[in-house]
Length: 464
Image 1 (cartoon, rainbow, N blue to C red):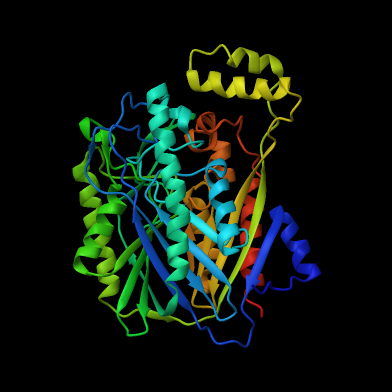
Image 2 (cartoon, rainbow, N blue to C red):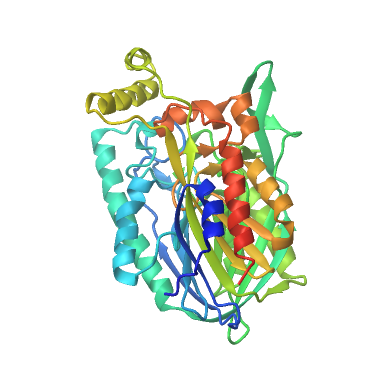
């Protein structure tokens, strides 16, 4: 694989991003020569099994309403640079969960760091997996064993589906369009000096529905890639709360594939960590949102779409996001006696590190990548639960690059708030850190670090 030469000035600009891991591109004079490979595997669990995303559930799921899948879309340019999107029907994955998967993929396929981006759909109706918010659910010993077994099968399937997509590479053409769906609602409601959950019709949202059509050499549609910036939380009450499903994005995918037989519909989650579907509550709400989203996509597909002809270039880095100073031992020992099991477990983990002579976390590394197709389309791919302010900024700052923001990629260490949210407080910037095992919040400088890193990477990829 050819590695792009990085200038000294470029390296200095990228130092603000933290550790620069890799940067690849095609040569400036080469034709696009794009190839795309596709693969899909089913990952529906056997029930009963614990579902991820809520601390309030008190029992395992006992029914499956909608099958879960993992899909891979591999892309390769004429210089043999590869990038693989893996669309996963799950709430999220952690670095610890992904490490053995990425090691095996590097061994088998020689993919460099950042070349495989697992994008979790963030459905809250999929199983808990190992090393990923497992203590949020407080599973029993028997439930932990089921989680372990499912996680092992899922890791094997992730390796398998990426390999199958790489083996399927064939000439392709891309077309891009933009639709709109309006069920995402900002969920941060202001009550005096507090921020609580609710529906805030005046809060920021991202209603864009980006759509990418992938055609084969014969002109037939092979894949429909789409995105939306909203939590997978349509289902959150009653017996439906204990049902396995792909949530609204899974139902949208199902509608598209039924109307386009032989075509794979692939969902890439947007940056909407502070948005919830509205209305919400039951499976019927998820189905309705899925119909609305599918309708927006079909409108784009049935109209004129722009060809994506630019040469594929990629860049990858990890950004060190600084936390506020960790608490002292007195605070940790007090928290270790808390009646809240999640606060207690977080404090106990910190005390264990102190007693072992290990440093306490002072920063969180966050994967960030850019996948650019000339001036036609630019994917901004970021780990974590990224709030909508980032999507809106990137669309404004990089408007000429036709940006497509993607969150929940690579891994989810925690929520990724902006300076505004950090100052306001609330779940996304503060209390959610309990479940992720960090004492927060972040320092307000994280926003400048991330925006500067993304804009520098995108700017550098404009040049040959």
